[in-house]
Amino acid sequence: MTIHTPGRRLMHDIPLKFVTKHVVGGGGRSVNAGLSLTSMIDFLVVTVVFLLMTFSASGETPVSKGVNLPKAENTLDMIDAPIVAVSGSQVMVDGAPGGNTRAIEDAKRMQRIDDLFNILKSKRELWKTTHPGKDFPAVVVLQVDQDVTAIVVKSVFQTAAFAGYPNVSFMVNSIPKAQH
Amino acid sequence: MGGVSVDSGGKGGRRSLDSEINMIPMIDLLMVTISFLLITAVWSHMARLNADAQVPGPPRPTEDLQNIPPEKQLHIEMRSAEKFVLIWKQAGTVISTVDVPRKDVVSVEGATRVVRFPDLAAKITSEWTTVGTHRDATDKKFDQAILHTDNDTPYGAIIGVIDAVYQVHRPFQSGTKAESVPAFNMTFSVN
Image (cartoon, helix red, strand yellow):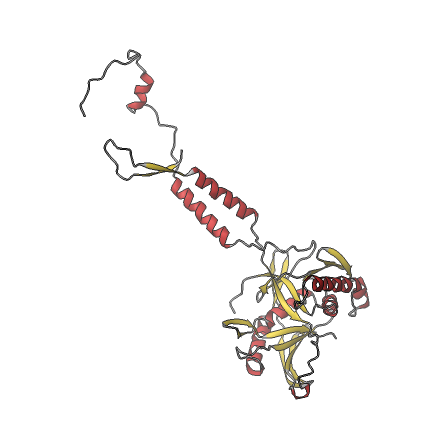
């Protein structure tokens, strides 16, 4: 490729000093700063991987208002079952009112909670209607506040068993196992 | 524009092989993914402790129930504030009784008062090792533990005892899969 002599340029007499100043490096420090993308992308990728590893597709099991669950180490994974919440003297079944335990606390003896019994029994019948030919799992999850007394817990436990749910699970917050 | 130069050393008058990967869509994708995962993250892990109400199953007329030997059961009394009492019974007959001094290890985590009984857990483990019946991995049955409490025991303490009972593990063969499972089934005494 041959070398040509530069030809005429338009407005070559205009000095354009500010351009010359920048091109030869005589100006001040440039305000145009570069951003290192490599470390930023590394950080984002590590964050995504961590969040993906801790992601739970089943979501969070709702805890009724006012229920402060106890914590335990030797636990099992949660299962899908009707949830009976006991907070104070109020009993809730899957978020709907399911009776009251005040009579049990006053009498200081185990009693069947009739509202809870009827709701659980109707849930059992509904499950059997919608799942014909399948074995009923008979599991119910108790979501009980840590300060509720044993007499109430045993009454709810027995009521659930009488209603056809003998496999009772106690919902707890899982904590890592301590070194024994 | 953010980009990564991939210089392959192209030279001459031909079309340059020096290309840039556009990083902006990638960073946008990462940001959206992080936002989604942070919003949907579950930080509290719910779990459960299993119990069994010991309801009799349907009648099995083909089995001779007279010749089935009664099982040994571990009764755990927590009525006293000073001690637990571990009683092994078989068909109503007391086989052995052990007193375990009650030492509540209490820690407060947030609003929760966590009660643990490590001494009880250690004693139940040693008791099961010597007296427990169903220890083989192929055994489908489990030893039975029955908890006796007074009416005013707080639920948090009950969970502490159940947690101590479930600390005892045994091997269990489920099909081709071998796993470690709690050695006891747990239930409550009604009286």
